[in-house]
Image 1 (tube, one colour):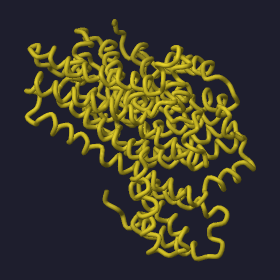
Image 2 (image 1 turned 60 degrees about the vertical axis):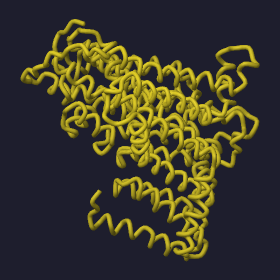
Image 3 (image 1 turned 135 degrees about the horizontal axis):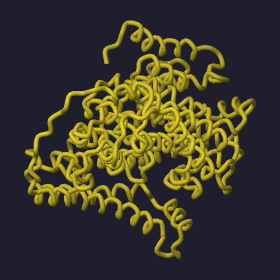
Image 4 (image 1 turned 180 degrees about the vertical axis):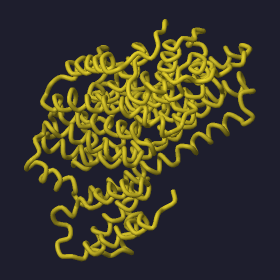
Length: 544
């Protein structure tokens, strides 16, 4: 990204301000300990560069820790905060799993197996509703990665929706809304390891040992699933607009706009369709069965009588990071072998080369994660969480914490265009605050507010990313669907804002007060239906 003169002054001015602050007496007292987090957030807003923001935020913290000695701070940044992150087995396993999942997804993508799966399940109908539901269902099928979803669903479904008269902007809305919102709560995805790693970092900042059974990251992710309000409401709105055939705002104009017919060339049914279908289905089944079977076995499930509640406890005891790595490795090997011997004509490159290319695509997202871990390490040494807990504990009602965290995460993600960077900044701060405000101690069951807060960080990051014009998923969704990125954001935002508003009003505010998510979700879904039914207007009358 090309930096303006103002942004260059900001990037150089922040370390200078940190130095001047650090040499003052009692520089590590009071609110100064939140300076690295503030720096990371402000720079993310002003520069829209999450890499620079996280790095300078961490560096400013080491300057404070070294009393303004910039040279010692620079060496300590690597020696005491980067190297320990890369030497931590739990964090390395997160990074390794994400790289392997990137390679696995790339092999499935390039083999054409995902396209074959789409054609298998879509049928032959060409009505607007059927085409929209097909794209929606395809989004659920590609649950394991947000960007892969954007690329595969948009490219695969564009010809189908064109034939049915669905606008490209509507397709982009469907694609974007079934990408990150699904991948972020899928129990097997490129997101899961990152989410577990950040939850781990949050509890470490709270001074809690990671061996405590009640805070097993995978168990906490499962427990937070009912509190992913934005994701569920956004998906409900997408489905309802398709099923009811109603739109509002700029989307209505695009859907009603008379477009020239797009000719669809007749295509012969590919003779290798069944083979490509096998290339996609078999590795996915290996991955899914490997993860759930591995978690159950590794967690000691074979020694206990099976029950749903017991299975969750077993999954919580398992070394999820090791299971994910092993399952992904087996699935990747299967995908490579099947592509090589069953569908060798799918690409000029060898499957192994494609796998490593997919791993290379994960480098920049993993760099965000590494910098976030580094910033979290600095925050931990500054005891930022302790000060923040004391400050917020004096005035913030604990019931309002999930809603506040959701809104802060949304604003940050919207401004930076990255949900992963937002999670990397917010999770290590939000968890210690939630743990302290609820008065949790080792040996006790976690207060529900902690679980709700974890869900609010994850969904707030998705909400802001969903609305942001600089988000990678927004950009890729629009290009893969064949529409202008700004038109995509302009047509999608009115729906996302409704889902976000409902997440606060019908979700995080009452959930913070102790209302069950199983009562709130039906209320939210009913509100989604009422909004689309009475606010939306019919596009055309269509039969399924």
